Image (cartoon, rainbow, N blue to C red; front, side):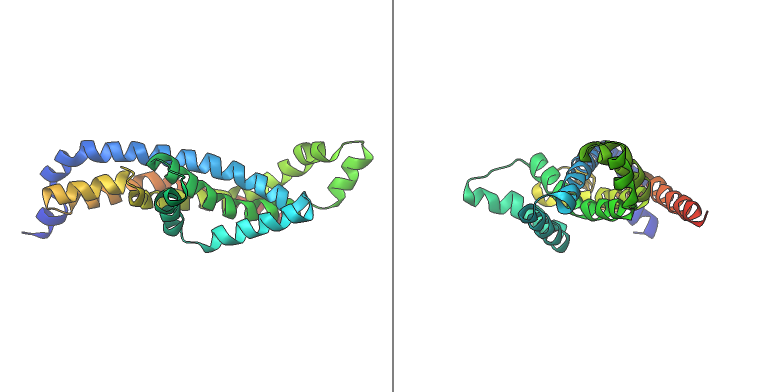
Amino acid sequence: MSLLETFFNWDVLVATMPALLRGVLTTIALGVASIVCGTVLGLGVSLVRLYAARPLRLAAMVYIDVFRALPMLVVLIIIYYALPFVGVRLDSWTSAILGFSMVLAAYSAEVFRAGIEAVPRGQFEAAASLGLHFMMTLRKVVLPQAMRLVVPPTTSNWVSMFKDTSLASVVAMPELLKEAQDAQALNANPTPLIGAALVYLVLLWPMVRLVGHLEERARRQQAR
């Protein structure tokens, strides 16, 4: 068989397109849910890391260090395959979203911490002189400034998270790569994997360009 017939077989691609589309929808839903949960959790962990009592700060530091050190695949395996031995059984969706969210939260927490610490301490003092309490100062003064700083690295983490959804096949999630692998086995042809790669490119290339645009805009703002 020629290269085109082996890797770019149009008939095989058309036949497997419904399965790939199902995988795309699953991948998008999984990615969006994990990004939302992980980003919100990461913000909460960063605030605990910065402002909570010392024991809670230490716990947040341990959480961040552990989940930044563990490979995503290991986290998914522990949640889906190890937890049942202690009586905790989670379905594929819950396991995947929980695993992705916990890892993303660890990275997001460090990004948010750096953004918050970049806001001058004088902002707190100025807000206190106006009679704003601590939580109001965070919500109205500090976080809006920090968010502008963390947008580029946060968006980059989101791109990485979308790529990592391909690991969800280890917990039997029918995401894009899993559907492509099943289609490859069924048709004895690697074209579905090429199709999946092209779909990932279409999904993620705009996000990669967005990250570059945001980073460039942040550099221009800092240079002013």
